[in-house]
Amino acid sequence: MKKTFPFHVTGNDDQRVIEAIKNDVRKYVKRERRKTLPEGVDFWDFNCKVGRDEETPANKLLPEVSGAIDEAAKAGSTAVYIEILATPGHRIPRTTAVATAVAPADTGAVEPSP
Image (cartoon, rainbow, N blue to C red):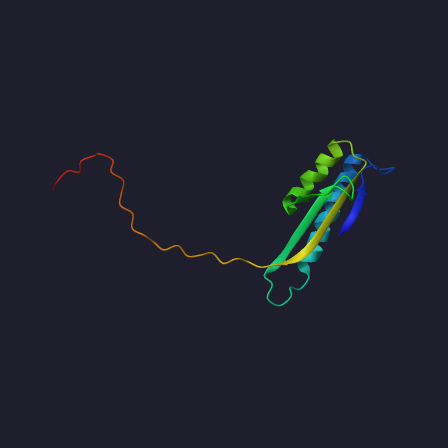
């Protein structure tokens, strides 16, 4: 999705317009996640950019997009440019840590003898 959303729509409250923009973003992400994954792909990853116009978008993580929309509205911008592209993602396996025996720290306490 590459789209410029206006913040001011005649006949609608500005706050409702902002919520409608966020709803469109959520719907797009849900729709993209439902698509079948290509062979060898673990999940859909999203490359997101948000800015006041197409020339100056900033890279954002998907959870940060909603906050970036709010920031653009509070800054007095008339519109917000949102670019969200779905890309194949690959999980990185966790490395198993080798368990090593660690000696207890010396606290200076004396243990009673039996």
